Structure formats: structure tokens, C-alpha cells
Amino acid sequence: MEDKIKDKSLINHESRQLQKDTRHSQVTDKVGAIDNDGNHGMDEILNNEVPDNVVHQLNELSEHEHDSDIGGLHPIELTAHSILNAPLDHLNEDFELLSQSQYILLTRLRLIEDRLKSFKKVVIDDGNMTSEKEITETFNKIRDLKKRLVVTVKSLDKVEARVERMNKKLHIGANE
Image 1 (cartoon, rainbow, N blue to C red):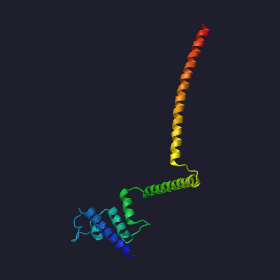
Image 2 (image 1 turned 90 degrees about the vertical axis):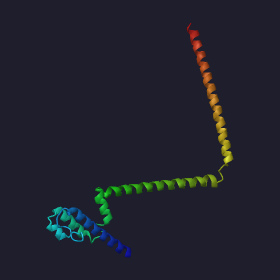
Image 3 (image 1 turned 30 degrees about the vertical axis):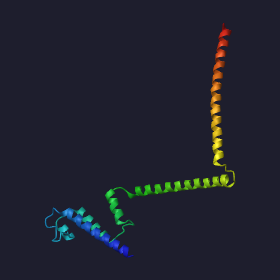
């Protein structure tokens, strides 16, 4: 609770300082607008014929000075919103999409994990798992069979080429 009080007092202090800075920057060219301590009062600003929009902004600042939350938004959020001049809803939507995609990824990871666990249960726990040595031997046999198959395909290509040449010779001899 004490932290909240400190935070509110800090925010109010910063808000007042911002008001002072804003007032100072808006009326520095007005003669007699500055007090001895460098601050500007509302009466001084009004007496120096400050435009209505500046007075309206200052009135809003002083109205909101005592409210640390305006419409459920923190003053820092309001400041960021005014500085960025873009709706924070887009940023919020982006964070929601990110959260949803993270949820989807986590769900997929859980599914993969469950599949791996079931595979482990079926293959390893049931005793159907073969040793690495057996797997290596099987891959070597497959590699050897593949080499033999490649050699056989090359031989078949040669045989087909010979058969085609023989067919051509037979057709040429039959046509004469």
C-alpha cells in the first residue's frame, strides 16, 4: 500500500513538473508571465491572453492531476499513446496474436511429446527395439542392395539398347 502512495505522489509530482514545463514553453514569449520562482499560475496565463486551446489543455492537466488512473489507463500508457499517436489497440491485438501463436506452438509441442512417449512405450518398453548394431547392419544391407540394384538397372539399360539395335537391323533387313 505504501508503494502505491509513493507511486501516486511521484506521478502527481511528475505531472505537476510537466505542467510547469508545458506552461513555461507556451508562454515564455509573454511579458510578465513568469513569477519570481519561474512558475506560471493560471491567473498569470489568463491575464497574458494565452490562446483558448492552451488554457483548455492546462485545465485538463489540472483536472487529471489528482486522478492517477483515467478510464482504467495508467498515466504512462496515456503518455505513450499521445506520443505515439497511434491506437494502442493494434499493439494489444499484436500481443494477443503472439499469445495465441505461442499457445498453438505449445499445444503442438505437447502432441509431439505425447507421440514420442507413445513411440518409446511401443518400441522400447515392449522389447521390440532392436540394438543400434542391428540397425546399422540393416542399413548396410540396404545400401548394398541399392548398389546391386543400380548395377542391375545399368545392365538392363545396356540390354535394352542392344535389343533396339537388333530391332533396327531386322527392320532394315526386312525392308530391303
